[in-house]
Image (tube, rainbow, N blue to C red; front, side, top):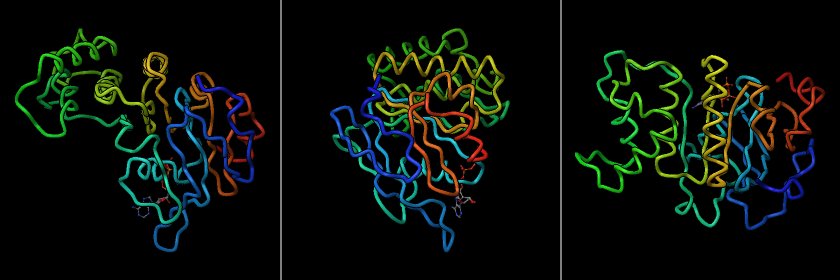
Length: 250
Ligand SMILES: Nc1ncnc2c1ncn2[C@@H]1O[C@H](COP(=O)(O)OP(=O)(O)OP(=O)(O)O)[C@@H](O)[C@H]1O
């Protein structure tokens, strides 16, 4: 777990946390994004450390998914930069999307679906080592029992676990969840995040969790980033109080 001493105090002016440590996995420096004339955010500066669980909060349309798409290099920012340490190629990123229904006729089994993430391209076989890793991740995400069930027949919670298993199979150092618990029932939300936390504790991975869910944020996060129309706020989770949230209408 990252030490609180290296984290910024609540920062209403968006000042950078300049304390790079050997635990730092990512730096975001004066990041800005515009679509045409519309500025989504600007001057976003923070660092992410191994073992940190950062919840990204903020009202609809404030730019949370845009930030994630920049981190995933799906979008190029209009200002500033994101750097990974020691380098982008040495940081594996896992991504769990928002829940979406799968066609009930979707033919792949849970196991085949999770295994898709083993390769960047389709291959007809898996190596012995890959089969072991696949079985291990199915076990860790509690999917062994339904490994041979077609994905179109599983519940919403099981589907999200399958996406999580896909994201974990390459043992990412950074795991990004973009509203991945939305639409799940309460028990399932906690179950999914328990699995995330378990992985994080085993590996010291960093987690970025985009959410509107405050109970989950408070239970699992070490830190928060609150995006809002004025200056954004960063802080440790014990600094996330009602005043901060009310000010942001989050
Ligand atoms: N490709 C795009 N082209 C133009 N505008 C975009 C594009 N992508 C996002 N936007 C706009 O950028 C703003 C931020 O969108 P974004 O999806 O990042 O918000 P969000 O905080 O994730 O919202 P929500 O909580 O509803 O998911 C919105 O006004 C959105 O319409």
